[in-house]
Image (cartoon, rainbow, N blue to C red; front, side, top):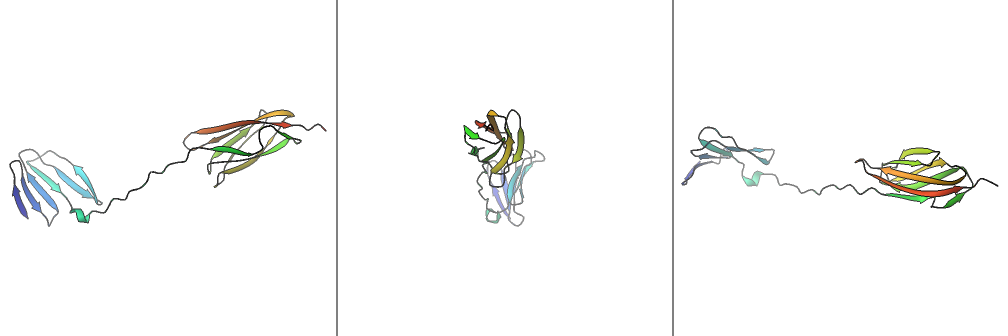
Length: 159
């Protein structure tokens, strides 16, 4: 144990117990080491300042980690393209968004919902009315964000 004296405080360095005791005329305070991290606790009582510290060489290094950023929500339609003319009442829609994202597709007369796969791909079919059909596709991320696209296809079943 070592003793130091200054004009403000008396220091007692206790290397064996990894603590420093400060005697002063104001209160009591201590610092605790928990799981290798310094946690500071200040308590005003008695007439001493007690700082319990571990030597710096025994502290575990802090690992720096990069913040995990969620990519922005995207939505693209692979097929069909805007203005496509089909001779069927049913159309298959293929596209991509973020992986495992909820997707809703609808026209004025039909709708469907699904989740994109682990690569972000999705595919489903909608029934069409004769003539121009506006198709709206919306993807929803897990934070409540949404991304939509709309396009028209024409169903011409008259032969």
